[in-house]
Image (cartoon, rainbow, N blue to C red; front, top):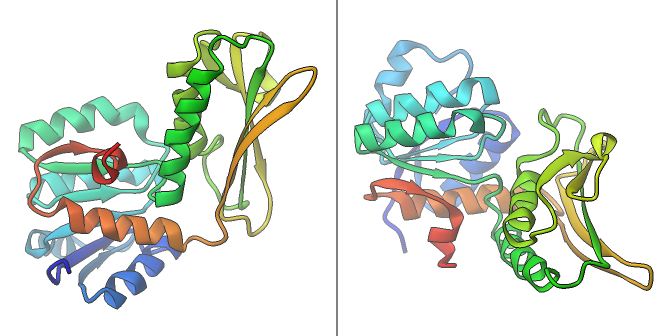
Length: 242
């Protein structure tokens, strides 16, 4: 059983509230909640925490992560849409001797899906008769499209399937060397991702359907427990052991 942690939650929307409940159910103390109206005094309390879990907004994430580094607090980041600054953040983590875990999705099931996706793409490398596409469906409040999870899935395909060189949204698809991602927004859909290989004779599909958001929150809390005492940049692959 992990020790009782003092956790900071950065971003107090639906995910932040769910993380709070799950962390408390596991016996942890929510020592600090930082939301959009946080003061400098609130941020000053961050250094008292064992770990921070960041689920805010893309435009806030980079600054929030840097504040965690400055406070010497390991941070688990579930916000997506900020990865154009990933190299900057990775370098800052080394500079501050900090600890960072990022994931486009903290669900254990989704990370198993990522692993299976890479294996299937490798198996398809010598079967050019199959074309591959990705579909993701999320709730209408989802700010980025495609989702960070879909981008991770796409990158797994691109790294393993030589006939695809880049991903594009489905309405921008013009060439067979492109990997099409169809991003759909519907009310109250936590997240559904599928990868389909289609040929003239059959289709092969792998799919992950989230029934609710609790899987993301549980994975984030498990990641926070794992991160205590570590230094460096990590992903869920490090936690799971792939």
